[in-house]
Length: 262
Ligand SMILES: NC(=O)c1ccc[n+]([C@@H]2O[C@H](COP(=O)([O-])OP(=O)(O)OC[C@H]3O[C@@H](n4cnc5c(N)ncnc54)[C@H](O)[C@@H]3O)[C@@H](O)[C@H]2O)c1
Image: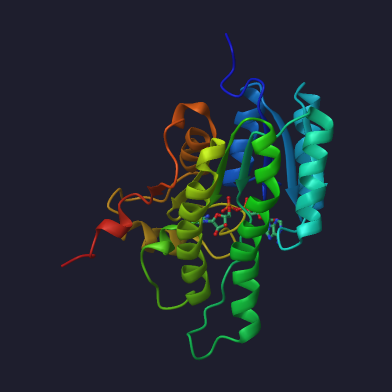
């Protein structure tokens, strides 16, 4: 049987948390599914310890996976990551950008300009540099799929996290521009908008009490798992979504549909 990602080369920016036996992130779960599906993988991240360990485990399991240190805010790092994928495997077909920066519990008035720039740079400068760097390689390959991980915060506001919410809404709109401009090259661009999930990104703030409180705000009554969110990423990354571009896949357990208890 042919695997779902046979002959595909994927770059996951922010996929380092793929260490088996540890809590995995969205990109980490997606990374394993891509190699298990026959794909070849490059993980680009700034967490070198986890990234190296993840690809070592994948290689020990017989899969093709490489790690490169790359900060998504650096154009040179994106170029090096794409170069690694294309020089090793000859083409690049899939790019998933998971990298993101958490916001602080500050209001619009109390947040610093540095806080604002830090969040905006990782998410919005990162996606801009990523898309413009992978596009020529995907064009050479005859097409490709780009999946940007946004958040349900693109659709709903909180008491804090202003830069985070603005950057996530910016991402969904940017994906539409990219989908329009790259559609003629058969390059699809979509976003996934996850809801609350316990991952390495949120584990420091999601204690048991917080998880219980948040669950009450979710129509489905619980938080998501990384596996559930990865399922959406993999659908958009694969050829199963060959007619889907410029779209947002909202995976929030119903949070943004609900006004809350009345
Ligand atoms: N977990 C949630 O509840 C949730 C909900 C909605 C959206 N998100 C979004 O998902 C993404 C986080 O994914 P996750 O929750 O699976 O956690 P994760 O920790 O597995 O993924 C984030 C990865 O990004 C990497 N990273 C951070 N800054 C980077 C940079 N400048 N350059 C390259 N890599 C960088 C981290 O090292 C990490 O490996 C973020 O973009 C976050 O906003 C998470």
